[in-house]
Image (cartoon, rainbow, N blue to C red; front, top):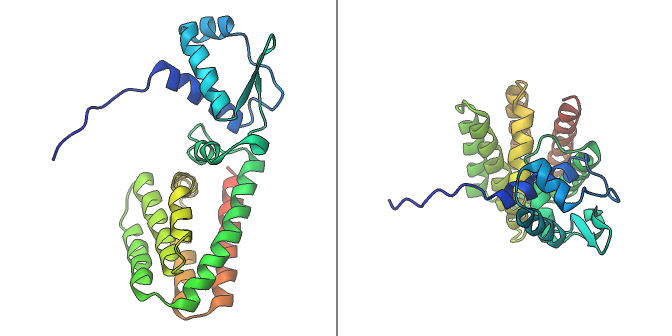
Length: 232
């Protein structure tokens, strides 16, 4: 095996991550003005070139606007963001999503997964359903939050494959960081037993070709996961 060099994040990367996370978490709100570059440089103990480069990158990602004589102002990334912005949002690692964003994520999951489980129940792709069962069986043997979250993603990705829709597995892959983070949070307070029970029931309904029950169970699973996180 050929190992690759390990590279630490640059000061610019760390600056961008700190500001981006504060915006996603709602600590910095649209229209709010950031301190001037000189003040940021002194406060964060980095050069002004780091701040300048970082602000330019944040503007490219649609998290801020840089306006002449006014400086950097927090943008509404929901209105102006692109797929690259979305990738930054789902990769968020700065704590919990703010409630409004968390609700939007689960609304997206409900619509997407409803179609996935409906098609999976209808089309009965046995190899993919076996992959989903394998993921559930492996989940019972995992010991760390990271292992649990990875196995959770494998389960939902297997269901997307079972839908036999060529786009859904790609969508689930694109939202991999989001699924990993949500699963990690749900597992923190001992929700693993409930997770296994609910997902096994969902997989059984899909395997039994019961489209209606599969949709009901998936909706129930999503609502349980959302309520669990809102209590955190």
